[in-house]
Image (cartoon, rainbow, N blue to C red; front, side):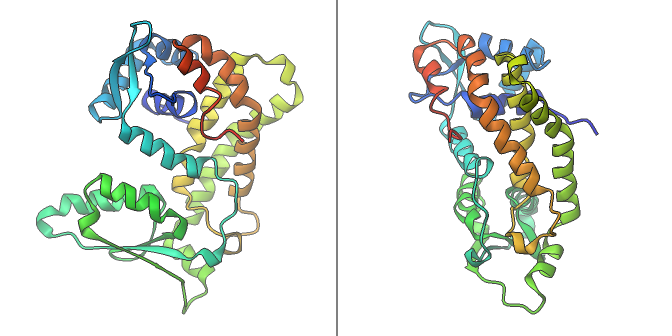
Length: 288
């Protein structure tokens, strides 16, 4: 199945990769239109998606240093991107000894719409279902979970706990109930099918590709990858099958990140006005 890269998702990926300036300077609308055109997104779709992100309070209208119309990230958007960085650019394997975080919630029937919102948010954070009303995730997600629940006004309905799994089933058997691991594995396999050939092509002939191609390939791989660390809670290796494809997909993303991000920045810079915006391409999260 072909990957779906929506205009709105690509805009978020663009801001995450190249759009966080030290002083919060906005990105010009004209620059966004030109940069998204490289990915096949037309101007009306860019403007419509920017408007939706504005209505959600993630983008704020502002003028660039030279007076052009632009959009800056809101404080909420920056926090969301910062939380995402910890997952997207993670390099260390989790340890089973780190334990788990449990989210136990109870929502009154009169507010059952919040129950649906709570379940969908926990699922998007990577939680599995241990029992009705009891959700579980690796303990390292505790801070991000707390931030998300407070941001959405859902904290009053939830109690968070830290702990270890003591039985009675083996933990590896339990996680197979808590998460749909075959479905997560398919997501990794789809990612590899789309982007492993890209990595092979760049390694075979990097000199044959220019900065525009680097930008295009990087934004597409980032847009694909940034969803995976949420669908996949990234469990300790001893709880996963030996042939788990998540290990290889993480390696492919890390390699493409190292190869393409800075090269892509060379193409991005001329489309973003203001010296602070240009300099910010060298100070983005994910630089290693």
